[in-house]
Amino acid sequence: MATAMKTLRTILIALCIVVAGCSNAKPGPDEPRETPNASAIPSVIRAEKQQDDFVYRLIADKEAYVEGDTVTIYAELEYVGEKEQIDIYHAASPFYFPLVEKTRNYSIPYAMNEPLIQTTLIKGEPLREEYKRSGGYSSSDDPKFIEFMMDFVDKGFAAGLYEMDGSAHFYVEQAGNPDKTTYDLKAKINFTVNEA
Image 1 (cartoon, rainbow, N blue to C red):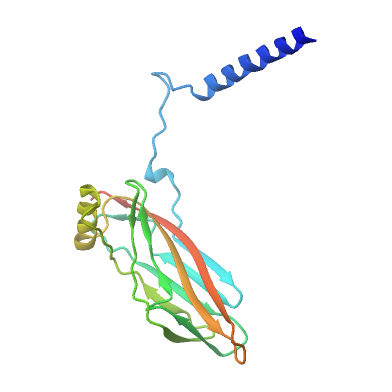
Image 2: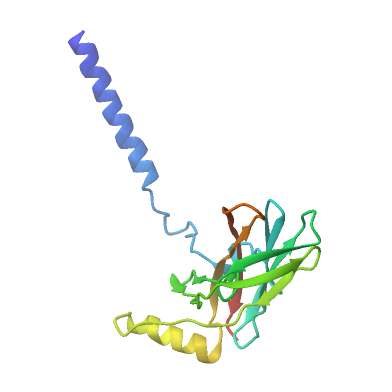
């Protein structure tokens, strides 16, 4: 019995070594190497999310831009419930537009003032807001990131793959009910900016 267990253990160890060796195999000189490529990632330029009586959309006008192009992105929030209109409460805007430049892995923050604002949504008439380029950095950030952000704010989008993980954040009060219903609808798009 001990000999059978020893043999089984030896076979299992040998099998693990073979599997590990196969998974770490590197391409030979004649085999193509896979490199991350922005054009290999399919663009998603329209995303939509519905929760209860609200539909949130995040839309870019093109899949690919060239450096120097105007990148147009906008968000919509539409009320589709039974009432003719409804009041929502939010910060300076219900829309958030944080970006990540995936080629360099840089997060481009999206700051917003946070007063409490009431907006009335009319059924079937989407509230729409266009993204305005912004961002920031601190003196302790990497110098390359600081340079990237300065160029981004001054000149626009550098070549790369961009992903926006947008959201609409607001709440609704129900008549005669002290509780409020909070909504945080999220949608993600991505697009490419090519070198000029």
